[in-house]
Length: 166
Image 1 (cartoon, rainbow, N blue to C red):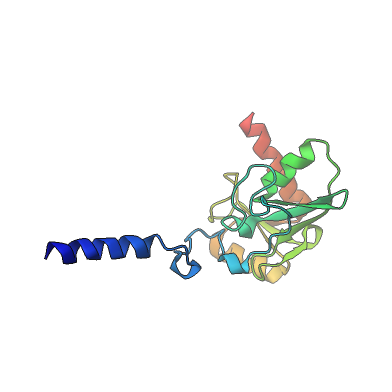
Image 2: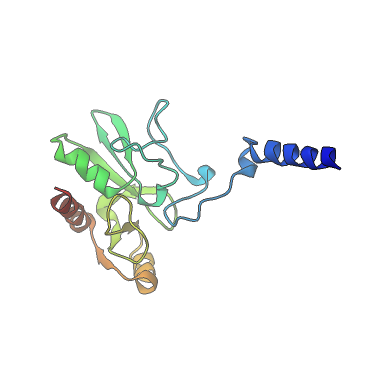
């Protein structure tokens, strides 16, 4: 009987330690997606991690942003980290954001941000989720509250995060 018990424990340990993706438990965080849904635009071994803070970009995908500097693409876990890069005096071009509905990167200047919703934020107490379609932003706002604004308004809110952190 003891051999069967030990055998069962060894089996569950081996199954539990499997590296197969089908064995992974999906995250329950709103910001997260399955790895197959995430678009990672950076190059190199650190492509999965935020350029500024090192957070996992799949885990914080729905708040993910990107920008270019001298032809090199950078990806950020949040608008907060994108703003932190801007604050360093670096000229970043072509800012993009993940559209929560389609999970695709879209031009941040055309996005409708819902700021301060009941959904948890990334790197900030004030959440900032973006939508390409204004009706999608309104539907999200109706369910989770928040204020709809454009990229510049959301960027100003991200700048306020730094005032409170200093």
